[in-house]
Length: 636
Image (cartoon, rainbow, N blue to C red; front, side):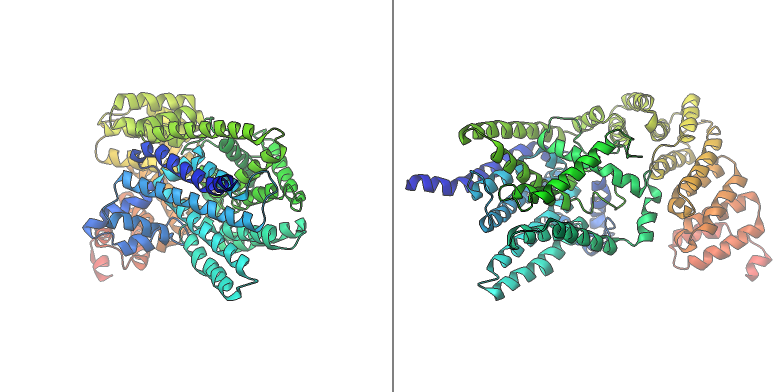
């Protein structure tokens, strides 16, 4: 009997350690994978540290990724760099270590909660906690968090969120008997751990909703009133919204998106159901790093899954509220509520991309708890048979994770698989095209051309990428391709930023003589039409896309369309805040000089001088070259 008790006592930590070791082994093949997307934006400046251009202080406290700067996460990258561990395997190994630590913390939190209020299942609470934490560690969905270097921000936010919750729980448990110790723990939770989580990534604010749920489900006298639970969460969500965005700022944030706030909110129920599908049935092709092909919901009927997804989500919320006081099903209600609470920021009102897997990193633990308790409560057979089925399922999960980490460890395979799984993703195709271009330009041209033909919605960006590739090869782009690019640009489907990047690259190559004698004049009507599209689509606050319009003006100048260029640039200059648009003023002055408009040139230069007193010397030299020389100017 004592042997059985000893086994029961040691089984949970042994199971968890086994899952930790297995997870570490499964992730090792992925440590040699590439940098991706935001990795370059956030980590690229570290490569300039040796030159003195990027001191650690600036790297840590001047990151523009979020409103709070994410200094805790950036400090961890600085530590990697300072210790000589900034190569890709070391950066990803650090992420993996954080993932394993998070698994331990999740187990500790669940065990503490279940000690306070054990779920009514046939499993010991500690064993249930170990199963959920081990399952969470092995999930294939978390690969795009662990092996995507910059998502260390999410991992660190989760680490400090879990420590926030753990300290809070231990404080609440100790409160009746040891109030001073309890208050110290709760204070450390709210005023030390929580700020660290928040300065790792702002989405950590959702742990406050998690604490509300923990208080209601584990520490309040029964029964919990469902309506009060809903009102508490709604109040907390409202406070978060007010803290992060004023109504004007919230509305304006969508001016640079191809979907509105309402469309984003309609789209998120579909995203949440897709996340759940990927959690429990990970064999599909939806997972990956590129999700710009996730269609926004334009109405309840477009796409057709919008209304069913919304009704299903409402049903889940209703179920959670109804079962909150059930003696048997309350853990399911808590798990569902914890999952939804974890999405309060990144899957609701903020103008972010519609879909990213890393948003489920901590919230997924709630769904795992809900499903685990549901299976245990409805399983009629012996636990030994359930253990066999669960073991086979976890083996499937681990096998899927092994396959995907192998793919993530090979850049070519990752990009090719991404295009196969997401053929309509502009990001997937353009990234594969750039990778191939460095190794086999002919293959790259063929791949991108086929993708543009197969996905008309991506043709505007992909045709510009093809033009850039020809110029980089020192070859004049074919006339049919230029005409096709003009046609695609006349029917824009993608964000202005993507169009701007493509046009900027081609213009630079053209000005450097890399495009040969190619005739780009067919682009003129498309450029003018695209500018009208920007003005009409993004409303009166045209300064939100001033950089894209600036590139259009520079293109018109390059193609000899001086009059339209002056008109366009003058419109940006007068509509925007000149202090933030010195490049527009410089381009406008250049256009007026080319047009021979001396009066307009002098006026623009005076306006430019008023806002560029502290401009760098290189910028001032460019301005001075445009100054007319004569008695009038000498007098001025």
